[in-house]
Picture (cartoon, rainbow, N blue to C red):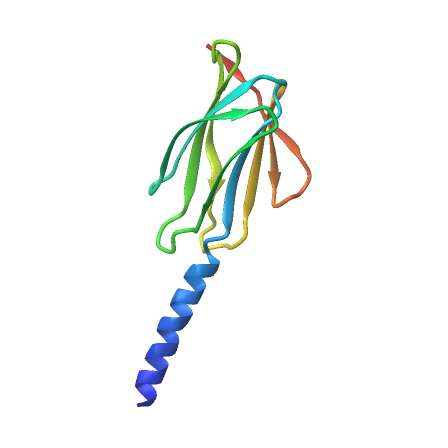
Length: 133
């Protein structure tokens, strides 16, 4: 009987830990210019989001959990400009840790002068320039 109770506690702990691991957020914001469109296409091993048109001062957002057996990595292609001639690939828009983490937030902000990152509501830091095709 005691083995059964221990077994059930282990199962319960496993599911509770998985529920808490769902709170990670990847968010991309358009702060380019009024009337501008930011095209966003993000992928991970388990998700392909498709192309999203993000209007000025709006967000594209995904909520997910980290994988327990492999590192969670999200990549995003960002495009902007009158002919979508400016682009950048965020190879690590979100990179999970060796061990699963909860409640991580990655906010990428697209501005005319570059791409900025805020980690977990911390200070905004300029990370990348736009490439022109």
